[in-house]
Image (cartoon, rainbow, N blue to C red; front, side):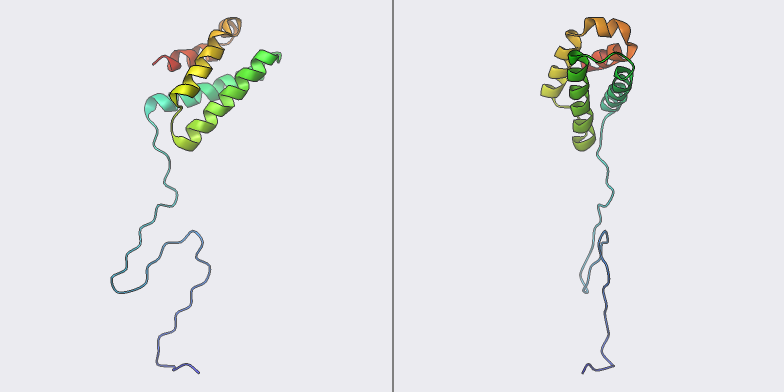
Amino acid sequence: MTDPREPNVSIGDVSGSTFAIGSHASAVSHHGAGLQTDEATEKLLAAVRELRADLTRVRGTEQTATLDAELAGTEEEITSTGQAGPTRRERLRRLLDDSQSLLSLLASAGAVAGLLTQ
């Protein structure tokens, strides 16, 4: 049996919580800390999303499917790491260079291509 004069501690569900126990304990929380991206990367992400939306408005081809897959990969890389790496940027730049007829049709493709050269 426990002594009723002793303190009683009960810890319930602590998922997503930050706490510390003890006289010299400290707790630091990083919950919800977002990725840091620069302005150029934010602009690129917005342009990539716009081009992906525009691609749904044109007749799909193998070329547009390949471009959309690379754009999706770029979007995922930016949202998960905060940047699009040089290899990813180069692949996307090459696909856009190969899509000159698409570039003339979609202003958003030109925006992405322009942001990749910065």
